[in-house]
Length: 192
Ligand SMILES: [Zn+2]
Image (tube, rainbow, N blue to C red; front, side, top):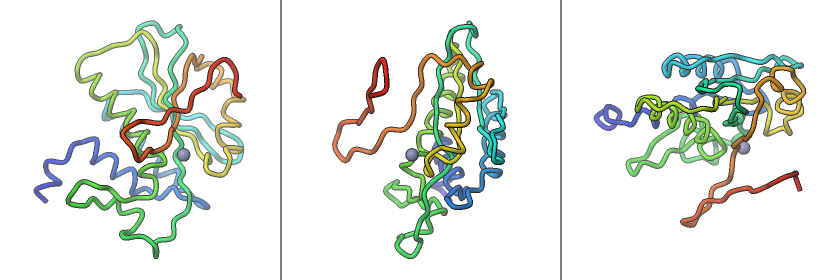
């Protein structure tokens, strides 16, 4: 209990998010949406949804900039995770077990719930420090990336709502690197 009492809020929120079972084939997107809404309220940000065909939604948390007509920054992540086979796991993949050394075990810990929480906790710190930025940030949570995005991002980019976001630049997942460096997927001008 002592370690839980002193746990960083970012870690606590991360573990809460990891415990929501958004694994295919039946991701609990409704529970994730509730989580995002509560999170937005906690951070004093706007939560909203865009409805997609096939009963899917995109969840967004928006931090409006001082010059909201400027192209915005999209901080993208996907809500879903791939299936797990619990019998091969040291801990229940949706328990978000934390070992004494701080290692957290969960389906989604690397891919990519860490990133979604990272965006929001970075915003928490910046807001708390009184920072404001010219551009609007849209923290965007999409469904169905792990099954190809056909019912997720591919539909989202066709919507009027997406167009209105006026995105100038977007961040999305990278991949873990066992060494000291970070890996960055780089592209410019056009997709290769
Ligand atoms: Zn991913």
